[in-house]
Image (cartoon, rainbow, N blue to C red):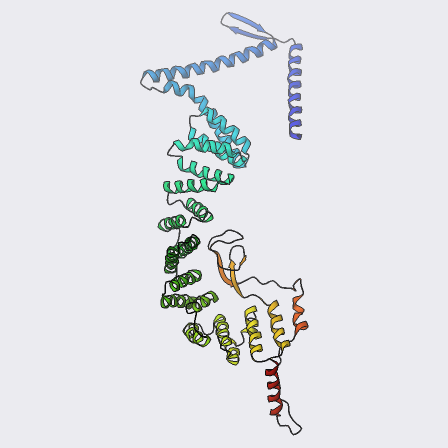
Length: 489
């Protein structure tokens, strides 16, 4: 508004200055003498100005006539477009100027000016591909999706601009929320240029959003073939897509095909834990328990995981706790020092009611890595060994405030998932879940659960042997104390 006011004031001042100057010239009574051959003309100030303007116009016309004459001569010499170029030269110059201004406005982010100048260039220039593309891009900047879509459709008729037109229509459909049409257009664009990485990523994202797992696997293969995806990453992600396809088929009741898809997912990526679990379940359902065990052992060798242990246990459902412990020994010997191995061995020993061995198997995990699971196992061991209820409650109280241990965490947004998923629930990213500890949050909780151990019970302290007056250990007291604990349990 302030700049507009300044421009109006400058215009008024200019008009006043011109009027004042013209008045001064008229009042001066001076004349201009003009002599042409034998004729002499006496002109007043205003007449002199008019004559100067007429002279300039006449000079411009003479130059134009000379240019037209030269064009006619070239036309007569065989240049068929000479006359046409003469008349179009000025039009083209104005069109190019408008095109330049449109490009500058677009670079500045001024969509309104860019559209206006691009429309002017479209009228002056016979370059529909260039001007339609510029108008469409300027309309996208301004947010006019209808105009952008109209101009992108106009570009579909030219082979040089068909691909970029489809790209623009994809963006337009995505802005409108029409993902189905955007996915169809992305598939068409990928047919035009299979090696275009941005189109590959867009189509893959749309296919995973629509749960089109088979289509996503084809797109993933194109990415691998075009060199935009390493082979190891392709195998893992193809396995994930095959696993998702298996879940979809199982939901539709096509169990045989779902099992085959799960087995294929494990074949593609044997160390992918969800694929190994699904393949083991499929092989167990087919009566191939030995093959299922091999699948679990191969994945366990890479990384011990509780889901693998659960799938391995499910292979033999009617075995006794002692038989299960014996069968698990081959699995546990692969990573004997891993925390998961110690926890699992302690759980198996608890089921056989060998609580001292369970304590030895657990080692110092409950101190070095006090997770909910480790502390709960300690509570079970104390209960099994006949400890007081206050001791058991103390361990359980500590478990309430302990960290959960490794979980499925999205590496992109750090969202915690209860179970593995191909797509993060929070940010929608694909193949970003990792099995690791969640980011730790320090400070007391809002519910003050840190005080629970002081309220419900305390942890056991080392028992020191008592001595009689002569300094000998009273073994009867220890035996009596142990026996009373067992009776209490």
